[in-house]
Length: 487
Image (cartoon, rainbow, N blue to C red; front, side, top):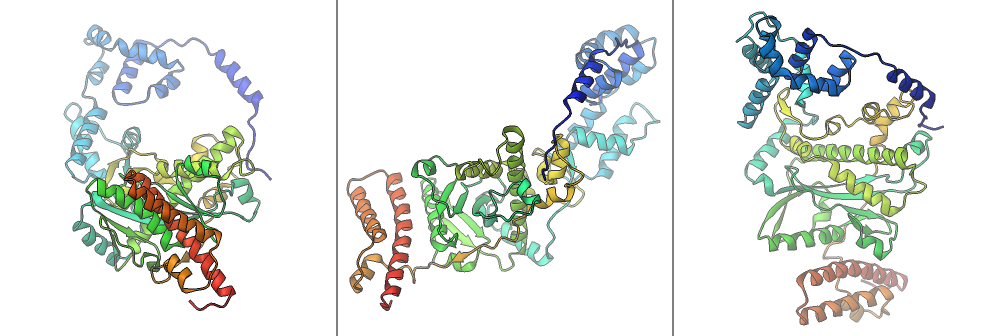
């Protein structure tokens, strides 16, 4: 069973032959004036060329003669009065931009009234029909806002109160979700079980303006040379657990960067509270709302948008390069994850945390797919060669096929995180390779500090120290458990 179908090359050739035999089309004066009027009112040149059966370059040539045509025939044809009228499309567009910039709310009723007000200055018999307004909005990428977040008023009110006391540019949101990264659509529709997954930990400014580097937690060991070139921070976890120490390591570098910028931020993370024990930083204040419903729902929408882009990119690679899960490596997947993360538009994130009033109009400067998040619509829009009828439901279900993937958490706090050297002195435990590696990095950090090494080098060594300490503790606990040594 395969989702993909090939196009008929014979049909393409016959279509090309038909197009090459199109007869010469002559446009009279009235037609030229209608073309000028249509262009002035924002109708796409390609659409006009198709309607008249000519090349778009012909439409451009006619429009260049606009002034000459108006001067020559202004006395002869009444239609020219309409051609010389105000450009309704541009005038209305300028008004919408001005109103939105000043913070006012515009709905379809106000848009209709303003359009009729503009056009009635020159024509009393004009009726602004719904089709024209809809076309105007489509041409200028103006959308009607509808909130996708359904949560209690209590949660919304707490969020509004919370954010009013803070600078939104310094407020960040953190979350984590699971991803069946190697599951492609052919495997999904064949009901094959996903055998691999990763966790993706993200932090983003609530205005969408600043996305921090993604942290990908996986159980596959990558070569050191590969890790250095990754567009994400990859952390190996044998048991695929999100732990307190992983979160601390992720925040350490960011806190140091904030210190150099002399900047302080607030961070709200939708993770298990036990993972946040004993985590505190001078430049990162970790906060938590009493009711986290609004935050949780928004993080789920960010996750859905990310996964839409991830699956879209995954399918694109299959179509263009015939690359599916059988030929993609773990490094390839991290690159797809990074591209998908940066494909989630800033505006989309801002609209989630600071929603407009329902049915109000706004300019959509981001990819329309962010609002749609439908693989079915994406396939239709880009003429993807596939069986859309048979798999119409499966396409959109594929986006969140891993929605219920559980997040495994491990609580590694300071109470459990004993000092490795003290543990070795207090118990008759022979140092293992992991412990020796930890002791070596401790000596290296001491040496780097004594030699006044660059701060970035020391910080990198300290991050490695945290990782090695966690591994060393695990080895010690295993040895102690084996030898029945009390902790």
